[in-house]
Length: 137
Image (cartoon, rainbow, N blue to C red; front, side, top):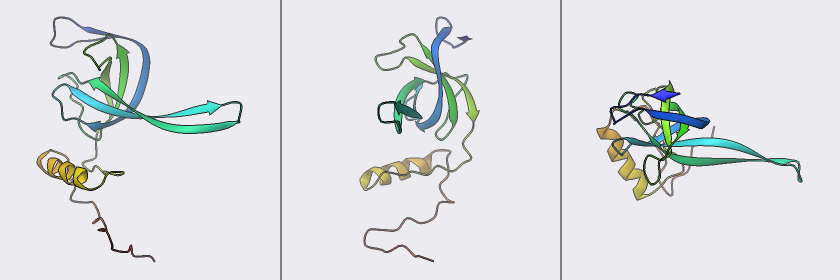
């Protein structure tokens, strides 16, 4: 598969193809894609879930945004960390991004950044502060 870009030539994909969610789009032509995997341990007859993050090249022709579900393919080394490229957007973000498993200052910085970006957080329920108890029905 060959993807056209505005570089000197086309970037040829090869090898593995994965799908995941864009969790960061801060860089100009790079997005971070998080994907789930299910590993099997035959000795114990058990499964283990895990998550991994990949820095992925985001061509101008595709332009994946925060929260999109994308398909990525392996390619030649583009930079020190990037050897994957976004091939297509499977599902665009619905305009709501839920930030979980973060807290403190990191969440505040991310919230400020999201206010300035195209992704809206207005529909999120208020988060309970430290010391407050959750309402139980």
